[in-house]
Image (cartoon, rainbow, N blue to C red; front, side):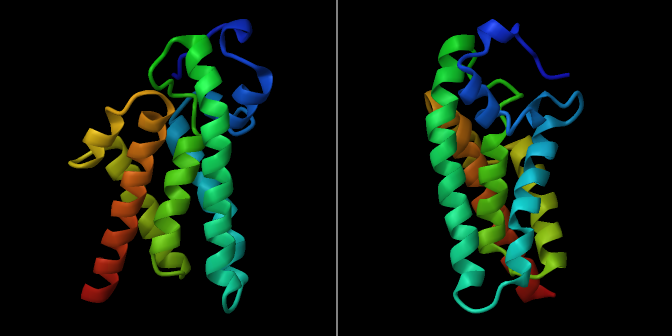
Length: 162
């Protein structure tokens, strides 16, 4: 179960709301998977877009989520004194969007990217494990972006091989 400090020890309300993706991070089981699922569902409209919009909209979502993460995570880390609380899940949203921006834009390949992202995010193989060691918000987000890049790239390789 994610550690849930008292409300007054979590940081500013706005930062907690954004970094937990409106409280999804306080899900009692698998908050990271729930955060990644939020990223997946944020990406779903891209399946229906054509032309340039099919690549611009997901990339815009990734940039917006990245900016929100950069703004919201530092005050939460400062207030809690924790390195990477499990209830911060906006980093999973960003990592999932990163994987989906790279993966082939079909639903099945996106599901494969989702599974690969979660595996890579949980087990943190090299070089993802090195990214996690960065300080502050960079370390919270960088490992998920690294796992997302690897998941997207592995999905592309699988598509080429199959």
